[in-house]
Image 1 (cartoon, one colour):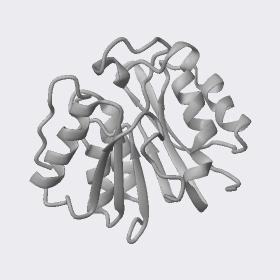
Image 2 (image 1 turned 90 degrees about the vertical axis):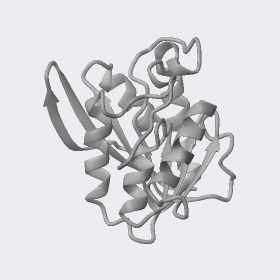
Image 3 (image 1 turned 180 degrees about the vertical axis):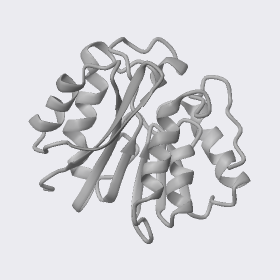
Image 4 (image 1 turned 135 degrees about the horizontal axis):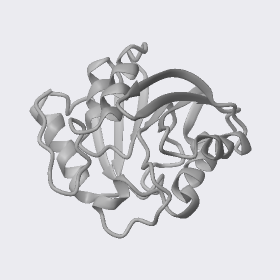
Length: 194
C-alpha cells in the first residue's frame, strides 16, 4: 500500500501488531462480506479487508485518523469499498448496520487516554474501553458474525478475555506469534446474536 501516517495516528510500520492482523484477515474469505474496521488509525486493516473484497466501514475516535484513512483509501483506489467515520466506540455505527466481521487492534495499556494520540495506546483504567467494546459488539454482528481481535503478552489477556466471555462468547485462539520480547495472539469471538 501507499500510506501516509499523520501525527497522532498509530503507525503500522513501527509495530508488529498491525502487520500480523492485516496478514491474518487477508487470508479470510472476505468477498462480498461486510467488515467494521474498528479503531482504524491509518486505515491499514480496512485497506487489507477492502483489497480482499469486503465492503468496509472504518471508524476511529481520532478525527486525524479518520482523515488519514480517507486519504489512504483514495491513494490506494479503495475509497469505493471503504467508508470512514469518526466514532467513539460504536457511537457512529447505526443500530441497523450489521457486519460479518468486526476487526480491532485495540489499545494495549490499562491507562486513561489523555489526548487523541493516546487513544491508540491506552484502553482506560482496567481496560474499560475493551470491556465496553466486548459488551456492545454483538449488536452489530450478522448471524454467525465474528469479532477478530489481536492481543499482546504485555496485556492481562485472561482478564480481557473474561470481558468477551461475560458478553456471551468464548474467544478462540486462532494465531500466535512471538516478535522480539512480545507475543501477539489473534482471537475470534462468535456471539449468539440478538
